[in-house]
Image (cartoon, rainbow, N blue to C red; front, side, top):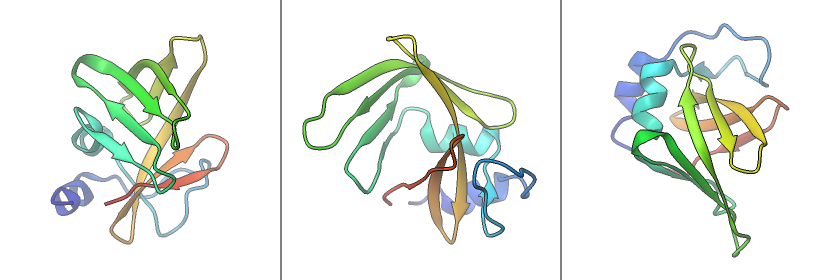
Length: 116
């Protein structure tokens, strides 16, 4: 991905104690997260896809024909990405860079690497 050097420059130093952050992770700040997700589709290794459309629309398409969940997203000042699903559920995630790879971290401590 051609944005990697740019994003690493914008990333914040390791400062969180939650989110299953590892010492080798660099937490992405708001600017870096915006470059990574705004208007882009991120594909995970299970073939699930998060689509972040212009204007804040969001969709997650599950792998193997598992359907699509729709909602909206917002990037907080600290770089967290919060998603409000149409069904009333919601969650916030963090993005980090680790050894040249971007990884989504959930509040539950799950780590989901993003395909290049």
